[in-house]
Image (cartoon, rainbow, N blue to C red):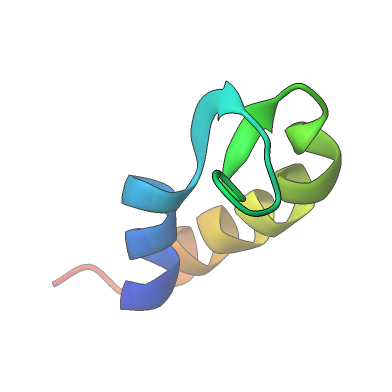
Length: 51
């Protein structure tokens, strides 16, 4: 679960997508690449038991 939380915290971002310089960007078409994977990461984090 920590990998999914880490990606949600630091990888996905609102900046322009660039496969090399900013693969986690959601703008400029990045939502096509990152939206579904980010939803999967959200589901993983939400399903994790609370500490």
